[in-house]
Figure 1 (cartoon, helix red, strand yellow):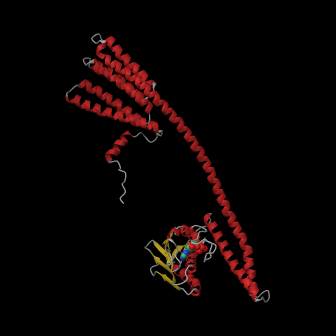
Figure 2 (cartoon, rainbow, N blue to C red):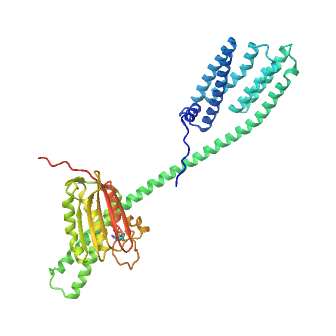
Figure 3 (cartoon, helix red, strand yellow):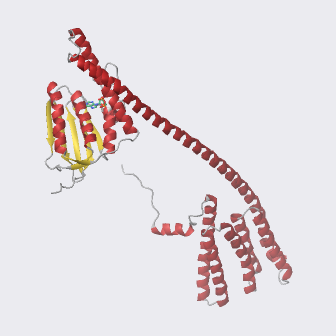
Length: 455
Ligand code: ADP
């Protein structure tokens, strides 16, 4: 499926947005919105002024062009102020500038129709409503209406009928804007109060979360420490039980009859199982509490694999399984890595493969994937793993068959340890399997070549 990506603005669009965007130090969203509004008004005015200046130059109206240039400079200064975040000052000065414009026009061109020129007094009223609080349109409206009335009184050639519509337009506009802006300001004030409350609530919740997080962290650390200490304490008496049982089985305490030997065998087997479980719990807790440091040293991968394959061969023979070991001839003779962790990983994968396979073969192969990575693959023709369990088997204490009557023993900790160790070695592990046909575990690790030994 082709996914529609949101359209990125073009270069021109980005430039236009940049022209309106206030500086980053203006953080309040309301102030940014107003700065954008003000900047767009300034830019529109600049465009109009430039157009008028060009027109003035074409028809050579010198005086008008100079006053337009003056206005252009003022508007540009106000634009820079708005983008720099001086929104309130720029707003007041913008309104004041447009309040002055009709006066300059009247002074420069006394012959203009007064109604047309006086209509420009509506602009500062509208601007005051858009940019400033509710009392601004009241003040500006009163000043504008007063200016129109004064103009009629001071100019004998003009009577009220000429400018009446402008006068009432200003009054109407002022009243409407006062109603609108007072409503808007109330909403804005309510929004600010709500925002403040929400911020306070969020801050309170963040504080609570931080406390809870610190507590959870502490509890987790205590759990790991408790498990580590307990496992350690359990191992000592258990080793004594196993040791003395072995001595009794060897006849050190005198002859024992067949029934006692059978019982001691059971004690020994179960003692071993318990010891394995405790060792796994201890390993997982040390790994989880990040107390595992990588001890990276040069080692020979070939020698390591040969040792491991010798160790597991008897188990495969016992179960009548074909046992294959393949080593890529291109694999560097020496690598740098934590050999102890690697042995742990491969042993866990091999013992699982041998445990869960009743007929067929178990294969261990080590290969160079490319110049930067090597792989360790353990595959078997055993019972296989259902696809939905591919992830859960790497979680602690999780097994495909977790019932009490399950056919295979185990604690469900082996792959969790493997996963953590592989991650610590900056590698990855993945599993492929077909139920009833077999499983393949592939570990990918980075190649860190050891420098050749000094002559
Ligand atoms: P354990 O083997 O002690 O139960 P692991 O963490 O090593 O714990 O394995 C978790 C589970 O993953 C096993 O119980 C088993 O269900 C499944 N599993 C692991 N390796 C294999 C394999 N080679 N073939 C089939 N199932 C496997």
